[in-house]
Length: 186
Image (cartoon, rainbow, N blue to C red; front, side, top):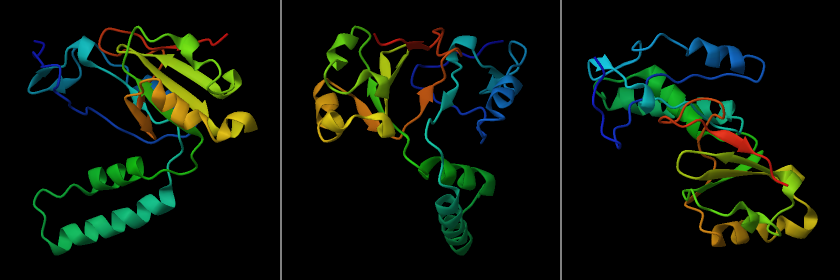
């Protein structure tokens, strides 16, 4: 029987690491029969499921160092219910490796994408339409010299809700009954 979840309930059912070569296989492993994912003792509603990804590589050396510190402090302080696996996964998620993309989250379904014109060169942009708006990914190495020193402030001026190294819903998967997709910039 499906569980009734409030819109602000956030339960992580699974998280994993992957490289480009194994990513599609890892995503395919998430496919399960309806009702197989459980939360609060019942089947997670299908429209509550979302697959998020971080588009930037993780900094595993820094994450390892931070994990050692965190686990050592937890042992010293006798932290109850210590979960080393979750601590290491959290350290990896927080550790940015090479910053390939800068993600601008715009939580406005009616945002006019034409407003991006003149802010940064179009070939540096990838836009993902989400249930609540858009994620505008700027590939930093592809930003033309004329925009390098101005695009960040101009993007913020457009009404961006969050920016930085953040998770975004995977295009082609589900996001609360919506399917995120790439938008082609003309």
